[in-house]
Length: 85
Image 1 (cartoon, rainbow, N blue to C red):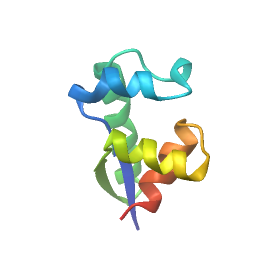
Image 2: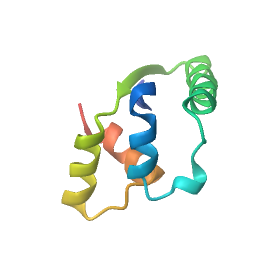
Image 3: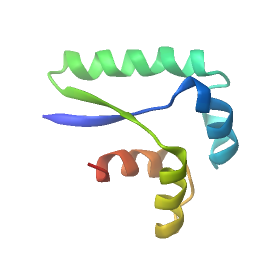
Image 4: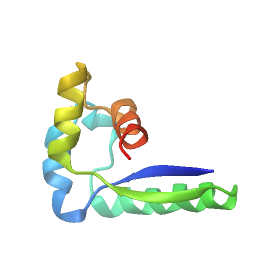
């Protein structure tokens, strides 16, 4: 089974933090987030899943959430990377 896992570029991190509605639940730095990302990716691959790094385009994420009336939070981000092929 394959899944997309949201990947945020280091250069986009500050813009990303300003964009999201659940800032309090996000890591303060890209480095902290990336460490967590790698752990999650390893856990998923060790369970036999094929993990695709899905580089999130912040403008596309914003449009996706706006068009659906969604807050830009973790749930919407997961939905975005699952829906976009």
